[in-house]
Amino acid sequence: MCNVGIFLSVYSKKMNTMKREFAVPQLEDMLEYDRKLIFSLKQSMGVVPNIYAFMTRSETALKRFLDFIDVPTVFDSIQTIAIHLVASQANQTPYCLAYHTTFAEIAGLTDVQIESIRKGSVTWDEKLAVLVDFTCELVHHAGKMTPEMLDRFYEAGYTDAYLVDLVMLVGMNTMMDYLSNATWLPVDFPEAPVVICKCNCKK
Figure: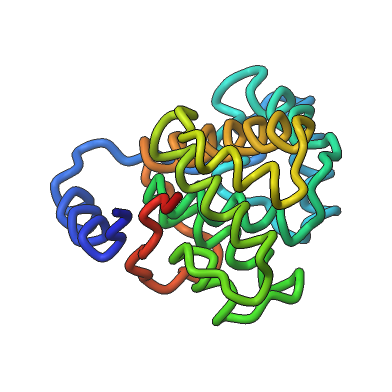
C-alpha cells in the first residue's frame, strides 16, 4: 500500500526535472523573533532541521507549529514515535521518515523495531500493534474507521482521549509531511532505509 521504493524512484525523476529549488533560509533572512525561536531549537535539539528553518518563510508558521507540538499527550514516547513513523510512511515522506527514524533510535528503538513499525508488522507489543494498525487505517482512509478497527482500538485499552490525541498527532505530522513533499528540502538527517510497507490497514 505504501511502496516507498516506487515513490523514491518517482522522487528521483522529479528532482531531475524540477525547475524551482527551495532554499533553506539563513539566520540573516529571518525576522528577529524567528531567529530567537531557531536559537532555542538549536539549544534544545542540537540542530535546526531544514524544514523548521523553511517555516520562517511565513511570518507566523514556526511559532504556531511549535506552540502546537509543545503540548503533552496521553501517549508515551514510543507510541508517539510510532504514530509519526506510520503517518510519514503512509504519506511517503523521505525527509520526515529520516527525522522520525533518528529520534526513534534516540528513544531506544532498534532498527528492526523501527522497520516493523513502518511495515505495520509489530509483534513484540500487542497494544502498540493495534495503535500502528489503527494509525495506518486512519491516515489511508481520512479518518473513516471501520467498526472492527474501532473495536480493536478500544478493546486494547485506548480511550476517547487517545483517539483525540491521535488525530491531533497525525494532523501535526501531516502538516510536516505535506510541507516536506511540496518543497523537496535537503534531508539533513541520516536517510531512512527504503521499506516496502506491508500495512494493509487490517481489521
